[in-house]
Length: 428
Ligand SMILES: [Ca+2]
Ligand SMILES: [Ca+2]
Ligand SMILES: [Ca+2]
Ligand SMILES: [Ca+2]
Image 1 (cartoon, helix red, strand yellow):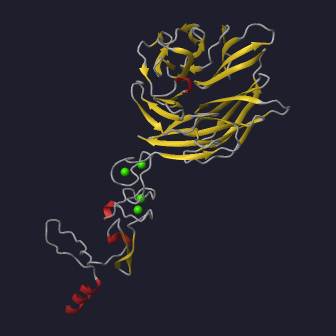
Image 2 (tube, protein in one colour):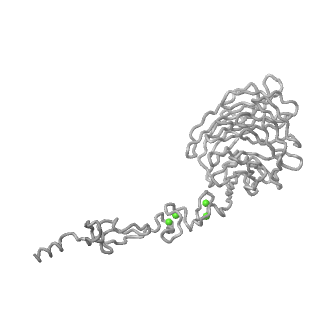
Image 3 (cartoon, protein in one colour):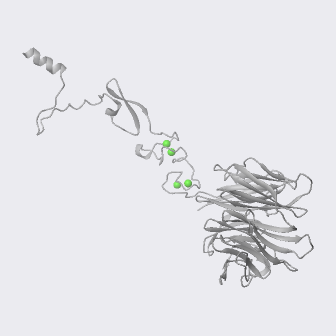
Protein backbone atom coordinates (compact mmCIF):
# COMPACT_ATOMS: atom_id res chain seq x y z
CA UNK A 1 0.00 0.00 0.00
CA UNK A 2 2.80 2.30 0.86
CA UNK A 3 4.40 1.45 -2.48
CA UNK A 4 1.20 2.31 -4.41
CA UNK A 5 0.91 5.67 -2.67
CA UNK A 6 4.49 6.45 -3.54
CA UNK A 7 3.82 5.58 -7.21
CA UNK A 8 0.82 7.94 -7.35
CA UNK A 9 2.90 10.70 -5.91
CA UNK A 10 5.59 10.13 -8.54
CA UNK A 11 3.50 9.82 -11.75
CA UNK A 12 0.17 11.45 -11.02
CA UNK A 13 -0.66 15.08 -11.37
CA UNK A 14 0.51 17.28 -8.66
CA UNK A 15 -2.29 18.92 -6.75
CA UNK A 16 -2.54 22.15 -4.95
CA UNK A 17 -3.96 22.17 -1.54
CA UNK A 18 -7.55 21.13 -1.50
CA UNK A 19 -8.36 23.77 1.02
CA UNK A 20 -10.63 26.73 0.25
CA UNK A 21 -14.27 26.79 -0.70
CA UNK A 22 -14.36 25.24 -4.20
CA UNK A 23 -12.37 22.13 -3.46
CA UNK A 24 -11.38 21.96 -7.12
CA UNK A 25 -8.04 20.66 -8.16
CA UNK A 26 -5.58 23.25 -9.54
CA UNK A 27 -2.10 22.74 -10.96
CA UNK A 28 0.72 23.90 -8.81
CA UNK A 29 2.41 27.03 -10.08
CA UNK A 30 5.30 26.20 -12.31
CA UNK A 31 8.65 26.71 -10.83
CA UNK A 32 10.39 29.94 -11.74
CA UNK A 33 11.78 29.71 -15.30
CA UNK A 34 9.91 26.54 -16.27
CA UNK A 35 7.41 26.49 -19.13
CA UNK A 36 5.63 24.41 -21.77
CA UNK A 37 5.01 27.05 -24.47
CA UNK A 38 6.44 30.50 -25.24
CA UNK A 39 3.36 32.18 -23.80
CA UNK A 40 4.21 30.76 -20.36
CA UNK A 41 7.24 33.02 -20.33
CA UNK A 42 5.17 36.18 -20.15
CA UNK A 43 5.14 39.00 -22.65
CA UNK A 44 7.82 41.60 -22.27
CA UNK A 45 7.89 43.94 -25.28
CA UNK A 46 11.48 44.76 -24.57
CA UNK A 47 12.98 41.27 -24.80
CA UNK A 48 12.33 38.10 -26.83
CA UNK A 49 11.84 35.20 -24.40
CA UNK A 50 11.18 31.69 -25.66
CA UNK A 51 10.32 28.37 -23.99
CA UNK A 52 13.25 26.10 -24.74
CA UNK A 53 13.48 22.63 -23.17
CA UNK A 54 11.02 23.62 -20.48
CA UNK A 55 12.84 26.74 -19.49
CA UNK A 56 12.26 30.39 -20.34
CA UNK A 57 15.32 31.65 -22.15
CA UNK A 58 16.06 35.20 -23.35
CA UNK A 59 17.00 34.63 -27.01
CA UNK A 60 17.35 38.23 -28.09
CA UNK A 61 16.64 41.79 -27.27
CA UNK A 62 13.82 43.36 -29.24
CA UNK A 63 14.23 46.79 -27.82
CA UNK A 64 14.60 48.46 -31.24
CA UNK A 65 12.10 46.92 -33.62
CA UNK A 66 12.44 49.61 -36.31
CA UNK A 67 16.24 49.46 -36.16
CA UNK A 68 16.74 53.20 -35.78
CA UNK A 69 19.06 52.70 -32.84
CA UNK A 70 16.58 53.95 -30.27
CA UNK A 71 14.60 51.74 -27.88
CA UNK A 72 10.92 52.47 -27.28
CA UNK A 73 9.92 54.57 -24.29
CA UNK A 74 8.50 51.51 -22.51
CA UNK A 75 11.93 49.88 -22.63
CA UNK A 76 13.92 52.79 -21.35
CA UNK A 77 14.69 54.38 -24.73
CA UNK A 78 13.44 57.61 -26.29
CA UNK A 79 11.80 56.26 -29.47
CA UNK A 80 8.23 57.58 -29.51
CA UNK A 81 7.36 55.29 -32.45
CA UNK A 82 9.30 52.04 -32.58
CA UNK A 83 7.50 51.07 -35.77
CA UNK A 84 8.82 54.07 -37.73
CA UNK A 85 12.56 54.34 -38.28
CA UNK A 86 12.26 57.99 -39.37
CA UNK A 87 11.18 59.01 -35.87
CA UNK A 88 13.49 58.72 -32.87
CA UNK A 89 15.50 60.87 -30.50
CA UNK A 90 18.27 60.79 -33.12
CA UNK A 91 16.10 62.10 -35.96
CA UNK A 92 16.00 65.71 -37.08
CA UNK A 93 12.73 67.58 -36.85
CA UNK A 94 11.26 68.14 -40.28
CA UNK A 95 8.15 69.95 -41.39
CA UNK A 96 5.74 67.06 -41.76
CA UNK A 97 3.12 67.42 -39.03
CA UNK A 98 4.86 64.76 -36.89
CA UNK A 99 7.13 64.85 -33.87
CA UNK A 100 10.19 63.42 -35.65
CA UNK A 101 12.72 63.93 -32.86
CA UNK A 102 10.39 62.53 -30.15
CA UNK A 103 10.63 65.49 -27.81
CA UNK A 104 6.85 65.72 -27.58
CA UNK A 105 6.53 68.82 -29.79
CA UNK A 106 5.42 68.67 -33.40
CA UNK A 107 7.50 70.48 -36.04
CA UNK A 108 9.35 72.72 -33.57
CA UNK A 109 12.45 74.33 -35.04
CA UNK A 110 11.75 72.81 -38.44
CA UNK A 111 13.82 75.33 -40.30
CA UNK A 112 13.12 76.82 -43.64
CA UNK A 113 14.99 74.98 -46.32
CA UNK A 114 16.07 76.32 -49.65
CA UNK A 115 17.13 74.45 -52.72
CA UNK A 116 18.03 75.47 -56.20
CA UNK A 117 16.16 73.58 -58.87
CA UNK A 118 17.95 73.63 -62.18
CA UNK A 119 15.59 73.74 -65.09
CA UNK A 120 16.96 72.47 -68.37
CA UNK A 121 17.46 75.01 -71.10
CA UNK A 122 16.86 78.67 -70.66
CA UNK A 123 13.25 78.68 -71.81
CA UNK A 124 10.63 80.57 -69.90
CA UNK A 125 9.20 78.64 -66.96
CA UNK A 126 5.77 78.71 -65.40
CA UNK A 127 5.26 76.94 -62.09
CA UNK A 128 1.85 75.58 -61.10
CA UNK A 129 0.57 73.37 -58.27
CA UNK A 130 0.68 69.65 -59.09
CA UNK A 131 -1.11 67.97 -56.24
CA UNK A 132 0.89 68.81 -53.12
CA UNK A 133 3.93 69.67 -55.18
CA UNK A 134 4.66 71.51 -58.41
CA UNK A 135 4.76 71.15 -62.15
CA UNK A 136 7.01 73.31 -64.28
CA UNK A 137 6.24 74.16 -67.87
CA UNK A 138 9.18 75.04 -70.06
CA UNK A 139 8.86 76.95 -73.27
CA UNK A 140 11.73 76.41 -75.66
CA UNK A 141 10.08 78.58 -78.30
CA UNK A 142 9.51 75.60 -80.59
CA UNK A 143 7.82 73.40 -77.98
CA UNK A 144 6.38 73.28 -74.49
CA UNK A 145 7.37 70.68 -71.92
CA UNK A 146 6.02 69.78 -68.50
CA UNK A 147 7.86 68.17 -65.63
CA UNK A 148 6.77 67.60 -62.03
CA UNK A 149 9.03 68.78 -59.18
CA UNK A 150 8.60 67.40 -55.67
CA UNK A 151 9.15 69.25 -52.40
CA UNK A 152 12.64 67.75 -52.13
CA UNK A 153 13.58 69.67 -55.26
CA UNK A 154 13.70 66.55 -57.44
CA UNK A 155 12.52 66.90 -61.00
CA UNK A 156 10.35 64.21 -62.58
CA UNK A 157 10.45 63.10 -66.20
CA UNK A 158 9.99 65.76 -68.84
CA UNK A 159 6.94 65.37 -71.06
CA UNK A 160 6.49 67.11 -74.37
CA UNK A 161 3.09 68.79 -74.40
CA UNK A 162 3.32 70.03 -77.95
CA UNK A 163 5.71 71.21 -80.58
CA UNK A 164 5.28 73.60 -83.48
CA UNK A 165 5.81 71.27 -86.43
CA UNK A 166 5.79 73.90 -89.14
CA UNK A 167 7.98 76.63 -87.76
CA UNK A 168 6.79 79.65 -85.89
CA UNK A 169 7.46 80.47 -82.27
CA UNK A 170 5.64 80.10 -78.96
CA UNK A 171 5.71 83.54 -77.38
CA UNK A 172 3.55 83.24 -74.25
CA UNK A 173 2.76 80.22 -72.03
CA UNK A 174 0.45 80.18 -69.05
CA UNK A 175 -0.84 77.36 -66.91
CA UNK A 176 -3.45 76.76 -64.24
CA UNK A 177 -3.50 73.79 -61.88
CA UNK A 178 -6.33 71.90 -60.22
CA UNK A 179 -6.22 68.66 -58.22
CA UNK A 180 -6.76 66.70 -61.46
CA UNK A 181 -4.06 68.28 -63.52
CA UNK A 182 -2.80 71.33 -65.31
CA UNK A 183 -4.15 73.24 -68.27
CA UNK A 184 -1.36 74.77 -70.33
CA UNK A 185 -2.10 77.42 -72.94
CA UNK A 186 0.44 78.78 -75.40
CA UNK A 187 0.17 81.70 -77.78
CA UNK A 188 2.13 81.55 -81.00
CA UNK A 189 3.69 84.43 -82.88
CA UNK A 190 0.80 84.44 -85.36
CA UNK A 191 -1.73 84.83 -82.53
CA UNK A 192 -3.08 81.27 -82.38
CA UNK A 193 -3.79 79.70 -78.99
CA UNK A 194 -3.01 76.05 -78.32
CA UNK A 195 -4.37 74.22 -75.28
CA UNK A 196 -3.35 70.96 -73.69
CA UNK A 197 -4.61 69.40 -70.49
CA UNK A 198 -2.11 67.27 -68.56
CA UNK A 199 -3.87 64.97 -66.13
CA UNK A 200 -1.95 63.69 -63.12
CA UNK A 201 -2.19 60.26 -61.54
CA UNK A 202 -2.45 59.52 -57.82
CA UNK A 203 1.31 59.19 -57.48
CA UNK A 204 2.09 62.56 -58.95
CA UNK A 205 2.99 61.25 -62.39
CA UNK A 206 1.52 62.22 -65.72
CA UNK A 207 -1.54 60.13 -66.51
CA UNK A 208 -2.65 61.44 -69.90
CA UNK A 209 -2.67 64.41 -72.20
CA UNK A 210 -5.93 65.83 -73.51
CA UNK A 211 -5.02 67.75 -76.63
CA UNK A 212 -3.17 69.66 -77.81
CA UNK A 213 -5.83 71.48 -79.71
CA UNK A 214 -5.95 74.90 -81.26
CA UNK A 215 -8.74 77.12 -79.97
CA UNK A 216 -11.00 77.85 -82.95
CA UNK A 217 -11.13 81.63 -83.32
CA UNK A 218 -12.05 84.21 -85.92
CA UNK A 219 -9.44 86.49 -84.50
CA UNK A 220 -5.81 86.82 -83.52
CA UNK A 221 -4.99 86.43 -79.83
CA UNK A 222 -3.21 89.52 -78.53
CA UNK A 223 -3.11 88.50 -74.86
CA UNK A 224 -4.69 85.91 -72.62
CA UNK A 225 -4.98 84.67 -69.06
CA UNK A 226 -6.39 81.49 -67.61
CA UNK A 227 -7.63 80.26 -64.26
CA UNK A 228 -9.04 77.12 -62.70
CA UNK A 229 -12.84 77.43 -62.46
CA UNK A 230 -14.45 74.70 -60.41
CA UNK A 231 -13.75 71.43 -62.22
CA UNK A 232 -13.11 73.39 -65.40
CA UNK A 233 -10.77 76.06 -66.67
CA UNK A 234 -11.55 79.55 -67.85
CA UNK A 235 -9.85 81.77 -70.40
CA UNK A 236 -9.81 85.51 -70.83
CA UNK A 237 -8.77 86.66 -74.27
CA UNK A 238 -7.87 89.90 -75.99
CA UNK A 239 -8.77 89.30 -79.63
CA UNK A 240 -8.16 91.23 -82.83
CA UNK A 241 -10.82 90.00 -85.30
CA UNK A 242 -9.66 88.99 -88.78
CA UNK A 243 -12.45 91.12 -90.29
CA UNK A 244 -10.74 94.27 -89.08
CA UNK A 245 -13.34 95.17 -86.45
CA UNK A 246 -12.31 96.58 -83.08
CA UNK A 247 -10.33 94.39 -80.66
CA UNK A 248 -12.47 92.83 -77.99
CA UNK A 249 -12.00 91.14 -74.64
CA UNK A 250 -13.74 87.83 -73.96
CA UNK A 251 -14.13 85.26 -71.22
CA UNK A 252 -14.64 81.58 -72.01
CA UNK A 253 -14.59 78.21 -70.39
CA UNK A 254 -11.68 76.35 -71.87
CA UNK A 255 -13.35 72.94 -71.85
CA UNK A 256 -16.98 74.06 -71.78
CA UNK A 257 -19.23 76.08 -73.98
CA UNK A 258 -19.57 79.36 -72.09
CA UNK A 259 -18.86 82.44 -74.11
CA UNK A 260 -19.22 85.83 -72.53
CA UNK A 261 -18.23 88.62 -74.86
CA UNK A 262 -17.30 91.60 -72.77
CA UNK A 263 -17.33 94.13 -75.59
CA UNK A 264 -14.68 96.22 -77.31
CA UNK A 265 -11.60 97.18 -75.38
CA UNK A 266 -11.23 100.79 -76.46
CA UNK A 267 -8.04 102.65 -77.18
CA UNK A 268 -6.04 101.80 -74.07
CA UNK A 269 -7.05 98.38 -72.78
CA UNK A 270 -5.97 97.67 -69.21
CA UNK A 271 -3.70 94.71 -68.64
CA UNK A 272 -5.62 91.47 -68.73
CA UNK A 273 -6.24 89.46 -65.58
CA UNK A 274 -8.74 86.71 -64.80
CA UNK A 275 -9.98 85.06 -61.62
CA UNK A 276 -12.77 82.67 -60.68
CA UNK A 277 -15.25 83.10 -57.83
CA UNK A 278 -16.45 79.53 -58.29
CA UNK A 279 -19.73 80.63 -59.89
CA UNK A 280 -18.54 83.50 -62.05
CA UNK A 281 -15.48 84.84 -63.82
CA UNK A 282 -13.89 88.16 -62.93
CA UNK A 283 -11.96 89.94 -65.67
CA UNK A 284 -10.22 93.30 -65.67
CA UNK A 285 -11.92 95.68 -68.11
CA UNK A 286 -11.92 99.42 -68.68
CA UNK A 287 -13.66 100.97 -65.70
CA UNK A 288 -13.13 98.15 -63.23
CA UNK A 289 -13.80 94.45 -62.87
CA UNK A 290 -16.35 92.57 -64.95
CA UNK A 291 -18.34 89.64 -63.61
CA UNK A 292 -18.70 87.89 -66.95
CA UNK A 293 -21.71 85.71 -66.31
CA UNK A 294 -23.64 88.24 -64.23
CA UNK A 295 -22.91 90.92 -66.83
CA UNK A 296 -21.85 93.40 -64.14
CA UNK A 297 -18.93 95.78 -63.97
CA UNK A 298 -17.71 96.65 -60.47
CA UNK A 299 -15.67 99.86 -60.12
CA UNK A 300 -12.02 99.46 -59.15
CA UNK A 301 -11.00 99.79 -55.48
CA UNK A 302 -10.99 103.36 -54.19
CA UNK A 303 -7.50 104.79 -54.33
CA UNK A 304 -6.26 102.40 -56.99
CA UNK A 305 -3.62 104.11 -59.05
CA UNK A 306 -2.25 102.89 -62.30
CA UNK A 307 -4.14 100.40 -64.38
CA UNK A 308 -2.68 97.17 -63.12
CA UNK A 309 -4.90 95.02 -60.92
CA UNK A 310 -3.72 91.60 -59.76
CA UNK A 311 -6.45 89.04 -59.14
CA UNK A 312 -6.74 85.87 -57.08
CA UNK A 313 -9.61 83.42 -57.24
CA UNK A 314 -11.71 82.75 -54.16
CA UNK A 315 -14.94 81.13 -53.07
CA UNK A 316 -17.69 83.62 -53.88
CA UNK A 317 -15.16 86.42 -54.22
CA UNK A 318 -11.96 87.48 -55.88
CA UNK A 319 -9.06 89.22 -54.19
CA UNK A 320 -7.75 92.26 -55.99
CA UNK A 321 -4.26 93.60 -55.42
CA UNK A 322 -3.51 97.16 -56.48
CA UNK A 323 -1.28 100.14 -55.85
CA UNK A 324 -3.03 102.63 -53.57
CA UNK A 325 -0.26 105.21 -53.90
CA UNK A 326 1.68 103.85 -50.90
CA UNK A 327 2.29 100.33 -52.11
CA UNK A 328 0.39 97.09 -52.45
CA UNK A 329 -3.13 97.07 -51.03
CA UNK A 330 -5.62 94.21 -51.06
CA UNK A 331 -9.40 94.17 -51.26
CA UNK A 332 -12.14 91.62 -51.62
CA UNK A 333 -14.49 91.98 -54.53
CA UNK A 334 -17.89 90.35 -54.98
CA UNK A 335 -20.75 91.01 -57.36
CA UNK A 336 -21.97 93.57 -54.81
CA UNK A 337 -18.81 95.60 -55.22
CA UNK A 338 -15.38 96.08 -53.71
CA UNK A 339 -15.10 95.94 -49.92
CA UNK A 340 -14.74 99.47 -48.56
CA UNK A 341 -11.72 98.76 -46.43
CA UNK A 342 -8.53 97.77 -48.16
CA UNK A 343 -5.85 96.01 -46.17
CA UNK A 344 -2.28 97.24 -46.66
CA UNK A 345 -0.35 94.43 -48.26
CA UNK A 346 3.24 93.39 -47.61
CA UNK A 347 6.02 95.56 -48.95
CA UNK A 348 5.78 94.28 -52.48
CA UNK A 349 5.78 96.19 -55.73
CA UNK A 350 2.11 96.08 -56.75
CA UNK A 351 3.01 96.13 -60.42
CA UNK A 352 4.72 92.76 -60.32
CA UNK A 353 2.84 90.64 -57.80
CA UNK A 354 1.21 87.29 -58.38
CA UNK A 355 -1.68 86.53 -56.03
CA UNK A 356 -2.45 82.88 -55.52
CA UNK A 357 -5.04 81.22 -53.35
CA UNK A 358 -3.48 78.41 -51.29
CA UNK A 359 -6.27 76.72 -49.34
CA UNK A 360 -7.59 79.23 -46.82
CA UNK A 361 -4.62 81.48 -47.29
CA UNK A 362 -3.46 83.88 -49.93
CA UNK A 363 0.07 83.80 -51.24
CA UNK A 364 1.56 87.06 -52.44
CA UNK A 365 4.55 86.40 -54.65
CA UNK A 366 6.36 89.36 -56.05
CA UNK A 367 9.28 91.71 -56.04
CA UNK A 368 10.20 93.08 -52.64
CA UNK A 369 11.85 96.45 -51.95
CA UNK A 370 15.14 95.43 -53.58
CA UNK A 371 13.49 93.95 -56.66
CA UNK A 372 14.07 90.33 -55.71
CA UNK A 373 11.11 87.99 -55.42
CA UNK A 374 9.70 87.32 -51.94
CA UNK A 375 6.77 85.15 -50.89
CA UNK A 376 4.28 86.15 -48.22
CA UNK A 377 1.42 84.19 -46.70
CA UNK A 378 -1.70 86.08 -45.72
CA UNK A 379 -4.37 84.61 -43.52
CA UNK A 380 -7.99 84.65 -44.54
CA UNK A 381 -8.72 88.14 -43.21
CA UNK A 382 -5.84 89.62 -45.25
CA UNK A 383 -4.73 91.57 -42.16
CA UNK A 384 -1.85 89.37 -41.01
CA UNK A 385 0.96 88.14 -43.15
CA UNK A 386 4.34 86.57 -42.75
CA UNK A 387 7.31 86.14 -45.02
CA UNK A 388 7.27 82.67 -46.51
CA UNK A 389 10.41 82.83 -48.56
CA UNK A 390 13.69 84.70 -48.44
CA UNK A 391 14.51 86.88 -51.42
CA UNK A 392 14.77 84.86 -54.58
CA UNK A 393 15.96 85.94 -57.99
CA UNK A 394 14.81 88.99 -59.88
CA UNK A 395 12.01 87.05 -61.45
CA UNK A 396 12.61 87.55 -65.12
CA UNK A 397 10.87 84.83 -67.08
CA UNK A 398 10.08 82.61 -64.12
CA UNK A 399 6.49 82.70 -62.91
CA UNK A 400 6.31 81.53 -59.27
CA UNK A 401 3.80 79.39 -57.45
CA UNK A 402 3.08 78.18 -53.94
CA UNK A 403 1.48 75.09 -52.41
CA UNK A 404 0.76 73.87 -48.91
CA UNK A 405 1.63 70.33 -47.84
CA UNK A 406 0.64 69.72 -44.24
CA UNK A 407 2.42 72.27 -42.07
CA UNK A 408 4.81 73.16 -44.86
CA UNK A 409 4.34 76.11 -47.15
CA UNK A 410 6.35 75.64 -50.31
CA UNK A 411 7.27 78.38 -52.73
CA UNK A 412 8.93 77.71 -56.07
CA UNK A 413 10.04 80.89 -57.73
CA UNK A 414 12.79 82.50 -59.73
CA UNK A 415 16.24 81.45 -58.59
CA UNK A 416 19.09 83.75 -57.70
CA UNK A 417 21.20 82.01 -60.35
CA UNK A 418 19.96 82.76 -63.84
CA UNK A 419 18.06 79.91 -65.43
CA UNK A 420 17.17 78.25 -62.13
CA UNK A 421 14.20 78.07 -59.83
CA UNK A 422 14.47 78.28 -56.08
CA UNK A 423 12.41 76.06 -53.78
CA UNK A 424 11.75 77.47 -50.31
CA UNK A 425 9.95 75.54 -47.60
CA UNK A 426 8.80 77.19 -44.43
CA UNK A 427 6.96 75.54 -41.56
CA UNK A 428 4.29 76.82 -39.22
CA1 LIG B 1 13.53 52.25 -32.53
CA1 LIG C 1 11.49 55.01 -34.36
CA1 LIG D 1 9.75 67.44 -32.04
CA1 LIG E 1 8.07 67.08 -37.78
